[in-house]
Image (cartoon, rainbow, N blue to C red; front, top):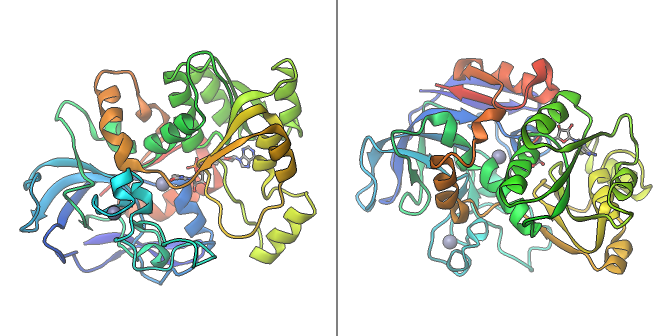
Length: 387
Ligand code: NAD
Ligand code: ZN
Ligand code: ZN
């Protein structure tokens, strides 16, 4: 089959690789019908995720048709159409029982990203996300092995198209979890940093939950324009306004917003050490969004962080967060927890995540697609690839 493989930083290639096979009784083999490129894939693409091996197959946002089932798969049959959550969870361990699927203790044989190994298990296995997270082959491919198939895959009614439901795999639950973590409800105010796919899904979710005033910060005008037209956000371009938090304070009677959402994450420009030094000097871009979030949130408010961070790289004003009595909520998304309810909202027309798609390309052109998405060429918001 064909698959998009990692060959080094900024070097991904579609190659012919062996077809996947069933390895456990509760595996399925999925024939992929649609797959997307995520902002998280860009961390890998930029060479910032350790434990990648040449030839690793990328992709954690995908869906398709069941091609083969293991003998212990109970609810799925050949031919079923399913969306797959990016998190691989067993559904039975200490954490899965708490619906903390991204913390599943049984699916990751890798070392995870946590630095203090004594303090936690490594978190769940992830598709296409390096050997840190179990080294599972990803779904930017013709076929993919899906482990724990009694827990993850969500069946899709035929009336819904691939594009309508594909983002249930990651960015829709991620934006939704960010908004729920931010405790948004009718009348809330919120500032979302980052108008990428995750920030846009957070804006969609904020509106859905009844938030009234939504600020959105980015420097890509085309993304901000889309967000204000689609979700009615108040756009702030940080190239023109270098202190968005100040503008947000002015727009909220100097209280700040009820919650901020950091949908940017780490933007390591150089080595981890350089990034740490920059952050300590409180300048440069690293951690800028997080610092702005702390400054823009009202006393007693929430900073919700879906953006991915790694390691010891941020100098931020923890003292200010303490003084303001802020709550921080963050982490990898417990996708399985939210997928069924979000599918309902798509089904009844209340959520239309597919409107963010700008690029529809063939899997064969995936290398070019990564380049377009990474460089934000052609006003790209989201790329969907079809094998
Ligand atoms: P993206 O790269 O397309 O978008 C990020 C946006 O942030 C860009 O438009 C960029 O211009 C903007 N930005 C950069 N610096 C900024 C700043 N200082 N202030 C405001 N905006 C800034 O990526 P995406 O797909 O939207 O993903 C965003 C983040 O979410 C990534 O870190 C990704 O890894 C993470 N993510 C997390 C989960 C999870 O489970 N928690 C799931 C999916 C993605
Ligand atoms: Zn993702
Ligand atoms: Zn588990």
